[in-house]
Length: 344
Image (cartoon, rainbow, N blue to C red; front, side, top):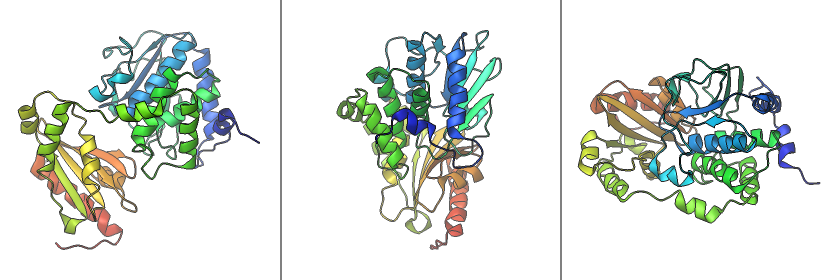
């Protein structure tokens, strides 16, 4: 007997034991269906493929239902191929009256970008980060999901929307980018079935996966400078690189999708933790990737950040050298917790 996509969505249970996943989706779906005022969709600062993909899929589905939807976002250039002309708005200083605010892929309210949190009549919170504190009137947080876009797929199935390539393509983009194009450990049978469903709705999978790899030529010039800084501290268990403001000035305006860089240095043989230090106005932003059992999330939480177990980030209020020392201290603690030893 075959199982429909809607049945799959409605038979999944939140493995945290706190809420029933299907019930939360039903509550969210009912609220969205019945809402007659404007809907504003927001995601996190520095939006990635999941932030844009999940938001864009929900926006297009709601607009197909006749809803008024605003999506204020400034995505990286390599994702702009997904957009229609004038599909995104500029940041909002205030929310429209009688507005529902849909917050997607945001673990912490302080990381919402594009519009203020306050001023909405109702707020929904759909996310897959385990550190999410369940803010909003209706929150559905499921850390077992590979991407918020996967949850949007389940939500739209619950709403019985009519799928089209225009809706399915950004939704699949969010899943592909958060699973490393189905290479990361969060690529489960559930994810693969969701991907199969979306391809079945008319996504050109070969074209999409090709376009997601395109980068501006300046990206490669910047990559060369960053790779020249790679070091392997803590006995080679860590790979670390830096991206300085001087590098950006030398290259000029570029498609700074530099999170790709930390993924590259993660593949160095023997590495358990990869760290990219990015200098920004006297502060240092960290992108961290890890291999089980080491937790990038634990490292970044110790530094005031957060994220997923294998992919996380933090911002340190210091320059590169101090940030490097703090990052290595937190990483050393996490490695030692799991029994790793190395030369001092």
